[in-house]
Amino acid sequence: MFEGLSLTHILLFLVILLLLFGAKRLPEIGGALGKSIGEFKRSMRDVQNEFNNPTQDARRVEPPPASPPSPPPSASQTKDPKSLN
Image (cartoon, rainbow, N blue to C red; front, side, top):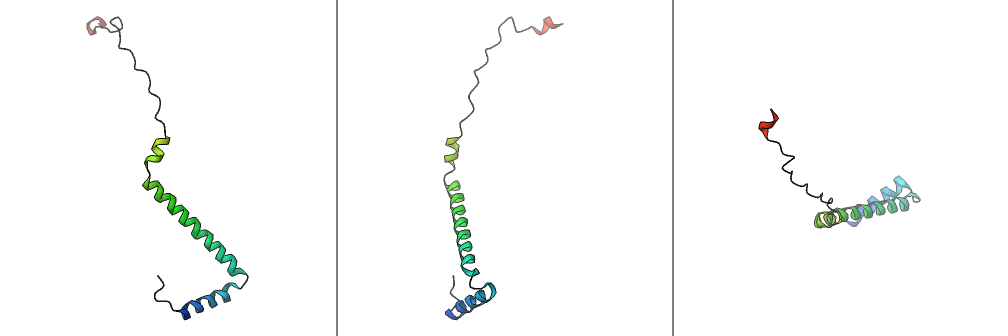
């Protein structure tokens, strides 16, 4: 990843950061950056787990209870279309 960077480049970068932010702010910035990277990695791992284990959520969701079947209509309830007239 850093094949093109030599020790001189890295030192120059650190000196510029020190001049821009000061010695007191650099540890705070580094800590915040580390926490952000850790949270990003944790989120990526959670997303990958969701895609790798999609059935885990399906097992937790219960299907709705089945309603009892309705009884067939009796002969007295069915009407002859001719008797409607």
